[in-house]
Length: 505
Picture (cartoon, rainbow, N blue to C red):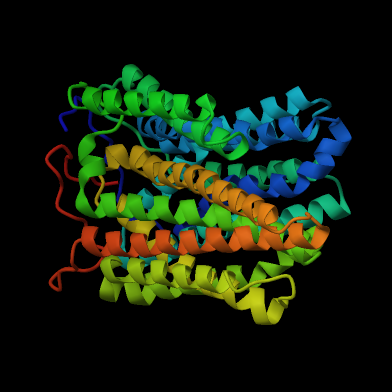
């Protein structure tokens, strides 16, 4: 891409003291954890918040949807802003804004106040999440260290949802639902101190490129329509005009955005960033992983609490072995297996492991024990997600011109967020429809029939999810480039026609 600006060249980050780089990873990891766990930590607290503030079941969804809509629709803008105004400045701004919005939500005295706080959280999360990944991308340039760093980051991205369930259970049961929001203030405070002292400030030389306002409006509107449409499909129905209307508008705006990016002088998303073969495969893998992962957290949580009678804390503790397996697989994969075999081998293996976990989930029933039923499925799922996420995230940002590291990182988060919205809507609709049909076929609707119907609905959704991950494995094999023996796994792919070579950073 032709640009009138040049990113400033600082001393290479790899020359910085190793201790400083790893402390930077801790800061970035805290920020990522805060954003990811917020998707689930609030879910556990919702019943208590509803009882305290007195809002209806119909209004309850907006506590989650307000965050998702703001977060999903503004991610690309947040990523581009980090490229334009500086990653350190954007990172600190995102942390402070997220913390203030969390404090406002924790102190909420009405439904409207809580929804507003959640929307503001989502907006600052959209600023923070891609910037965190961009900081990581430009901090770790030595291949071996980069693999380790992305192993940790990928583990956090994959395990954050489960950690949120555990943390939400403890905070809600032992303190108050408000602490599921207040906790972000303390995490952000530590991260801000670390960001100010550890994250280097980059100084741009030459004129600052302009923000692509038309492109921003088009893609933000498109992403808003996607998330809103799929959210309505989950809560209303697939026959609702409020489902298909926003989805149709989203498709039109997305086409218009792509056409505009081809002619814009300062495009928000240079198409070369997206069309590189390895990065495209990585974005697709993250989207599929997000589609399956968020829905399964929802189903397993409901199964544990409604079918097996677990408390919120017991439900969170049940996910701990999955987190351990995810972290183990992430470190082993990125440090040992990914450099040797490349993402074309590793990502499909991870997808097939998750598909196997889905098949194990289908065997669960109302009499299943934790050790013999739920535990093996969760552990296999952790191993699979820990294999998919780090390799995909590393491939998605590898070789990107440093000027576009923020927007490339935003695409990773966008893929995960849109995938989560699509997967949750599709699988939840499938499970609900199947459960309803089961009850109609087994009248009268006794409590035992309704309980069995829910488990049956989950099982059908798990089978569908297994097929989705098998499809992901096939796509990964077809799309990722074969690893070239003559180059290291972390060697950047050849620049595409619209990307300038990566600059010293």
